[in-house]
Length: 108
Image 1 (cartoon, rainbow, N blue to C red):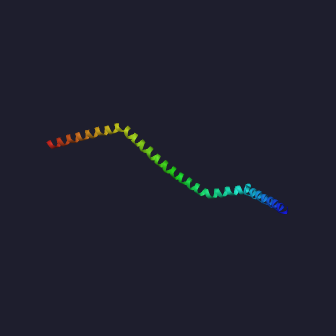
Image 2 (cartoon, helix red, strand yellow; image 1 turned 30 degrees about the vertical axis):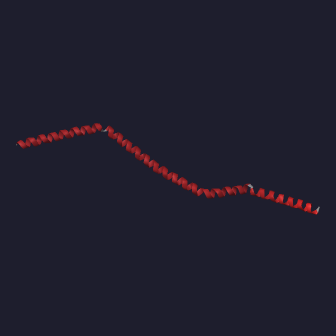
């Protein structure tokens, strides 16, 4: 009888101990500590990713600006074909006048 009584007391003590450990392990302050641990471990990596992304964004913005500038330059060149035609005509006239002057000086 005493053996069964002792087993019952031991069982109660171990159950209470297990319950206490369970409560301690799941206490909110322990959860907050574990959350803090997680943040402390993962934050440097997240910061590095953020700085990498900002750097890539800056590089992308620079490339976009360069492409837009090149496109506007090409568009302005296509719009300036009239001016190039005018320059071509003026150069042809200048060459023709030069030849006329050279021919007239050659006769003298």
